[in-house]
Amino acid sequence: MTVWYDTTAVFGDGDVVLRTVVVTVCVHVVLRGAAVCRWCCTNRMTHGGRHCSLELAMAGYQGDYLQRFQNYLERSGEHKVIQKLIDTVLRPDTTKIADGKTGFKVLGVGSGGGEMDVYLISNLQAALPSIPISVDVVEPSTDLTQSFKVPYSFSVNTDLYVRHSITNPRLWSMPVALVARTSSLQGVPFSWNIVTCAEYEQQVKTKEDTKFDLIHMIQMLYYVDDPAATLKFFHSILKDNGKLLIIHEAANSGFEVLWKTFKKELCTNTLSDYMSAGDIKVHLDALGLRYEELVASNTLDITECFTEGSRDGEMLLDFMTDRENFRTSFSDEVRSGMLELLRNECSTTIDGRVLFNCSLSALLVHA
Image 1: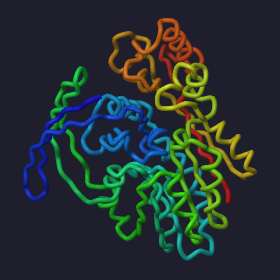
Image 2: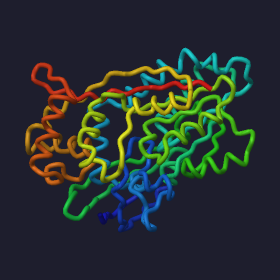
Image 3: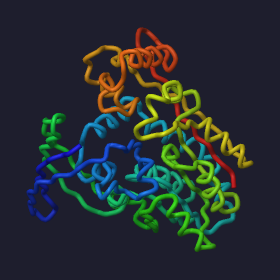
């Protein structure tokens, strides 16, 4: 998909820059605030030299997928659910992990733009006011890492023209990078690793002292080629009494029911397979690792998905099936079957509203 847009940027010193950008966008990626597509996981952030849309998102690209994802986030409240899990799961264990230590090392894997990292680190600072915290970040997207760490601030008036798609101008603003605008993080040392998980593993193998008190993986294990090997490696670099926090779509959620029932039709684009927290637990059990689980129930009102022509409903269907256009991507029979499954197996109906099960699971794995 080719995106054409003109950008007028006003910087802090008053300079104005007008430019026209033409980019070819990879549509493989499923953005969850952290993850990159399966192809990117093994080939950095390019596809034949073309930048992945995950990078372009933070550079001003606001195409169809980003709109669908933002719509899903707002309607489902997913980030709030993740924050609740962080609060509930980590709070009782933080002081135990740090007991007797003079420093606390954190590793974020697939941190994206850093929103959840900042929330988690702020919680750690509140719980451990006298212990210095240091943070390593593993994120293959250069642009998302920049949005996490580099202090800049400008507003952009963008007329975005996606051929045969978006023609409405939008006014948006790019915030100051998270680290720069979070005062409590100013004294926290960060180490930025713009590499894939596999590349990071190769780097760490040459450093015997690379160990962490807390490692977190939030909505990112969908996109690794070998989940068991990934879990084994990151568990191996935990310090004594350390913890690995995994937040993922819960077992038996609506997403698992939908994607496993229609695996043949759905696992052909971004994912070649679907994995829920239940599948992760199978890997953890096989590795003989000890863990605790907390499931946070959450629902999303998808009533509008059953009203053909509803823009919000279509956006949700496109997001949940990872398609550009749900209505034209499947045969009548498959489409009808998916809608029936979404209503009757993936959701509950209360007072005429269809509530999709989008619960999340937190797995706290012990060293």
